[in-house]
Image (cartoon, rainbow, N blue to C red; front, top):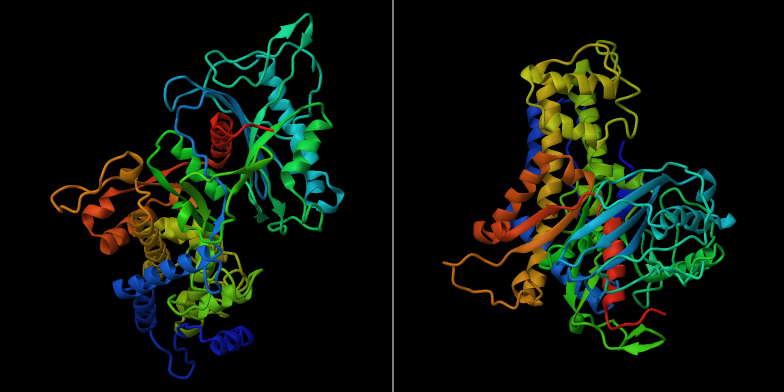
Length: 558
């Protein structure tokens, strides 16, 4: 049965979706039904071009603050790392389940890291209740552990990462000698004089993956909690000020010059070593994109940036958080089917994030499961839903029983007779009988189609970003002070995109589909110039690098 309330709303708004015909009196065979999904999910080039055009339009509307556009949130990140930053810095990455803290020492040679140390903790259950205001106090406590390790010179110069889960805070020896990093342009710790430690001000970048309203690089008022957080604590407050107060309560004068989300941080993480990086993309459980835009083209920006207690001129470029998950929320250019309607209707935000729900890892497996369920009901796949031949029923009909990790495993299965697929399906759906090779082939094709649609739609959005950046003259060639030739005999300048997220990092077949679609949209030469580079867990590093860039800029820390 269709979620008719959702369908009625979508039809009333003019949104488009494809209802794959189903009939219990005249049962279609599997190939006939699959043909309809093949037609819809193998999104043709002209439909991708339509989506690309829609994105360019919605980007422009958003930059002008007009209705019908993407959010296009200014990040106020107009101070960018060059690779010349030196010194010791900290990055905090607070997500939905874990806190990561990075200490890093940036070396004198351009783009070098002399040493780093990453610590990670799961967020305690009590901190998910925002009303008790424990979360940022806990963040300060855990960060202090890392600060104490390095202000006292306990960390050896190596690049190993360590994890600390629920480690108790150690506040001893708070007056011990603080060491300064050699050859630093910025010194944030001083040597001991007459038995007393001079002022210590750790420089920290804060990656906070929740919606905030920013008016400068170093502040942000929390708009709402998402993920598993509950309550109204901190909503409407500047999270940077609250975190600084939590540090101050522990005797730490923390300098937090940069606040950002994970997409912005991913871009910055790669840009430190590769200044030509123009875009950051998250492609995992969810999806989003940030890119460099000319500040003169961001019509909704205030006239001047805030900093050091006064207004200052913006830099020539600023990172824009597109929030592209809401692309084409009218649904006019998206190839949607009945299963997508179900996924949207059962989500936490029905009617929103329609683009994200077609491409992100949180949803791909569920779409595939619902298609498999339909084939079981209509064509007798696995002996037919509700029969006892395979013992199927509750698990196949259970939302979330077939995740995107399972989808990827099936899609990439090269084992003899698809043994991996058979095992995956038995585990996911609780089948008592091993599925036949033909049944495995059908499910494998479904998984491939769902991921192919995702990759092709993502490629259309990336193609729009590439075109927008080329129009804005913020390409790698412009950054390198070179010119991009229109002579087809010369290769286009590299266009570097930082990517993080499990769909990209753990699903090689997806990467192939994405790159194939980019070739189709951009042409082989231009697509070859688009370099998708994995930045695994890069948000915490991006936070530290952006703090370094802010500290090394002409803008003084407060």
